[in-house]
Length: 256
Image (cartoon, rainbow, N blue to C red; front, side, top):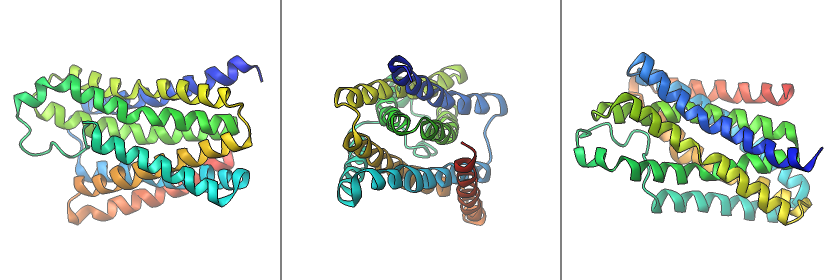
């Protein structure tokens, strides 16, 4: 495979994954406010997909390449990095603005929030690069997984912004912008892997790091917020979504 294709393909894939946040925003723009049980199901579905891919694909591949000790180390580093971004960078926690949202100060700070969301999504581009560097098919699988994560993210971030009184087009645009840093992450990831020679150790560490990033996103955001959108009566929609996502991801590993 030509080196330029190896470098450019994960960037293109991460761009497509990042743009899927805009798809979620467009769904809200077109259909209006979506029911909580639907949001709970699709977030649960995305979480199920991410659990399978992060553990049964990324982490298992890392184990085969670099063993348990290095894999666990890189996994923990990826998780801690995402936790640090969560704590230090302002971004929209999907359901955080459901109440008391008509605060014009929050709306005027929209660009700051969009920047925080963008930086929060940056490591997802690294995940695509790591997967593609090991196996192009794994890179494709990870891209699909991130798309499925970003669509409900776009829905759940656009909904409260529109509820706050923000112009619908601007809300969709901000949601879309938040995903456009993912190609930047892919550029960084591809560059680092290339500069370090792309050997077994580098690829293995990258895969385990990516698994840690995806695992943290799933446990800290998707599943808790899926329950936040669902009332207790509909909590099983989340669990059902997780199960469907797990089955879907396992089928995808057979196809791709």
